[in-house]
Length: 443
Image (cartoon, rainbow, N blue to C red; front, side, top):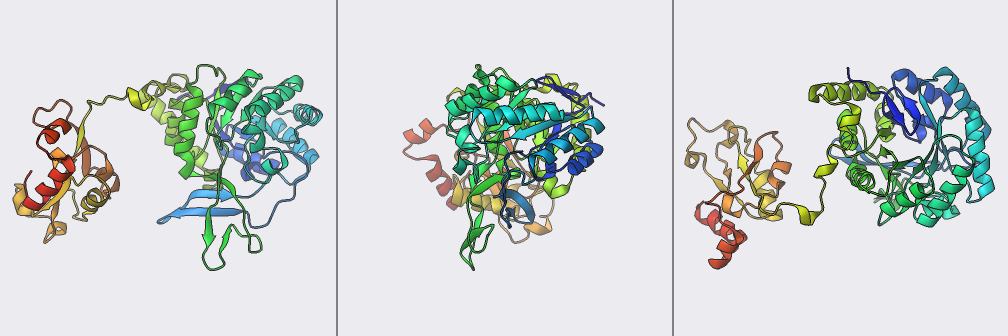
């Protein structure tokens, strides 16, 4: 199997899969059980001054039968005393000397407070510290969390305070609740951060109970904004990780967080430049055991592709471009495998109502396909692509419930494909042509 061992800004671990700071790392017992399951590291649930948490803390966004596609919480940092957390960090590190143990920290914005908590983390034996500049609720109102991460000057200043006392690596955890993630990332790096981690949770309101009209989760009939995470935030995290990793002024490694649930998710983040991965919501959903599939899957993928962790890192970054740099001469059109089609007509409805009216319906007998129509096609109009009207938006392939039934084919340079100028010269738009062809059965 491929070697997954990692040296992340001087912090070593047997693999890049770390638990992110959160409920799964709230106690020494949990972290120890995670390490026994195979996790390479853990970022302790954020340690700070004594905090009282609310009851009724989590909300979920389901997608069809998929539970917790998105996850929301109004939980704050650990409500356990600092001395208890530091004692358990010491105990866990002694039991698992080869695993990465990172202390996540958040205290009031005073140099002395940060010096004290950094020193205590080092004395406990932590391999590194993570400065939590991301919590969007309950702490930002107190001048901590996202209130720091959203202001580059504050981000740099507190990073500097931590570095004044730290003898171990300092990782700065960034909030996504900004218009430009690069500015706080640059500020932290310029102040001496050894690494960055992102993203923290996205500010959100998960829903409203339509019977009580109270926001969810509900605390005695009331609710508040919270932090959004889970699979639904992965695209946001991919974008921000890619942006930070691709910035020429930021020369420190990145630990990626946000919707990672499988080895494929992990490989995508690494390919965009991430060095380590942090996972939280997926563990809350499925337990520590998921790391086994992550390790096996990533190892097998690297072996199959003849890659190492180092050679995969950033390999996709060169293909991330600004919109104006994309090839405007590239053309794809949809193609339907009618032997796989089940006649649901979802592609037809989606294209007709939500895209470019480039799909029509024809009787099976007019398709010129040998053999009888599949049972699913009997009496139903069969979707066909009107190529001249197809702009290659991919919508039909995305809504199709049958894998491989609709594929996008390269038509770049095809001579018989009409261009927009051709339609303009004829006084007709592609959309109008599609509507006409659908009515007349042309194309």
